[in-house]
Amino acid sequence: MIVAVASGKGGTGKTTVAVNLALSIENVQFLDCDVEEPNAHLLLHPKVSRREPVYIPVPVVNEQLCDYCGKCSEFCEYNAIFVSSNKILIFPELCHSCGGCAIVCPKKAISEEQHKIGTLNFGSSGDVELVYGELEVGEPLAVPVIKAVKKQMKPDGNVVLDSPPGTSCPVIETVKGSDYCVLVTEPTPFGLHDLKITVEVLEDMGIPFGVVVNRAGIGDKKVYEYCREKDIPVLLEIPYQRDIAEFYSRGVPFSLEIPEWKEKFRTLFERIKESVGK
Amino acid sequence: MRICVTAAGNSLDAPVEPRFGRCPYFIFVDSETMAFEAVPNMAMGARGGAGIQAAQLIASRGARVLITGNVGPNAFQALAAAGVRIVVGAYGTVREVVERYKRGELRETGAPTVGGHYGMGAGMGRGWRRRYPPPPPY
Ligand code: SF4
Ligand code: SF4
Image (tube, rainbow over all chains, first blue to last red; front, side):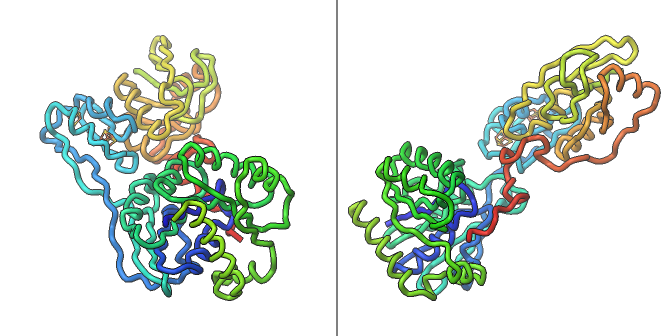
């Protein structure tokens, strides 16, 4: 079963929930798709056994052939090419690798070169197999790196996907194809606002989902009221309590230290499994 | 000589707009006659590369000088490649800055003045999370 863990905003404890879930079930692969700021490995402390670069093709120009007609730059929707009367510049960090410029160039002056945009890290921590992607600093394209991470998926077992926060393309890329999505939120007006946006996206995508309330006890009851109205299951509440916070600050997943939480995450997983019929 | 000024409006009396790639208008001024042409910036709302598109426009219209507020690294590189001289930190109306430039009171810059994505608004620029990391999850 493939479970994505997402949240409408950063800082809700999404990664904590994803890691604790993964540590509480068997035969599991953890894919950290938050490639802009991967941090599951900071909780899982894996031994990284292998790294692999992620490339995308970007155009290069043979200036011997180019006559600076400007057709490529006119074509490029992402403004990644600049042409003046005697110079042509390509900005690889803006290029989306559509390949169009090479096709429109009348002089056949454009070819493709591999440009590194990220790295895949493979490792394991106890029984959890971990793959996490890392976007190169300054590179804007998270989606190709997320795709590369998801290619490593072993769908025969259980898979936990840690999504980036928000509802932008990288989130959709991550959640796409999951059997279930766990939405982590906090019981505050901000949490509710972002939760609603994420719920709309998931409803559009047709992916079943439920909510985990983190830092339960702070804020108000609005998140619960919303879930009741919309018939969204509240799968788990993690209270705002000192020992959990302390384990977090030491980089220790709390389900490893407090066995009853391992049990709770396992129950959560069984419940999801039942609800999607797997 | 043709000078391009980034402006908030479409006349010589419009104030200079400091954001280069995201200004509403480019005003091309003939420094001898003060005849001008106002070109609306089609890339104003572009998701990325607005500075490069603006540089492309300025180069293709044959401006030799650009007067603006701030220029990011990509646009700077493009303008430099096209041999456009760049004046940054300008303020006042379009007419005033062109006059000042003609009197030699404005100095050209040799370096970009802001990082990428300047003027895109919080949360719009890609990679913004790198600059404003969220609080720790717990
Ligand atoms: S389309 Fe080809 S020939 Fe024209 S400017 Fe681009 S690279 Fe040069
Ligand atoms: S491959 Fe596509 S996005 Fe990249 S420079 Fe060429 S036209 Fe632009």
